[in-house]
Image (cartoon, rainbow, N blue to C red; front, side, top):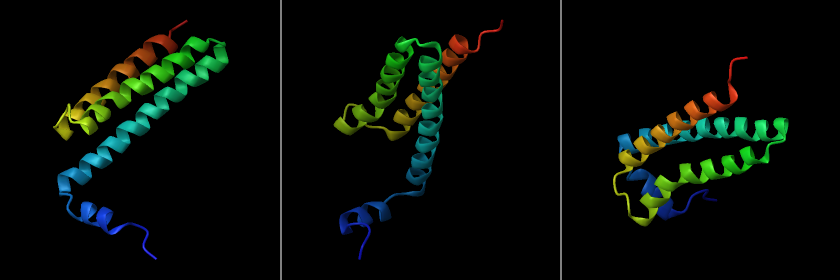
Length: 104
């Protein structure tokens, strides 16, 4: 029993080393972004401000924009996509800190 199709195995075997590292970097960015979105959803429930929940949905769509543009061919450089994702993560982290970590 094969877990992966022949086509998928060929695709994986054809990846270069930098592409594999780029995939790992993207997963780290995605994990960090999901943690930030968890803060937004938690604050939405805790403060009963459902606008934060809507903001979390919007931020998630914003984060998915660059990979989507890559899939349809509007962006052709995978490194550029990862740079955009890293910038988005930094911006959302800064915004999250500014909104939810106010000093009393």
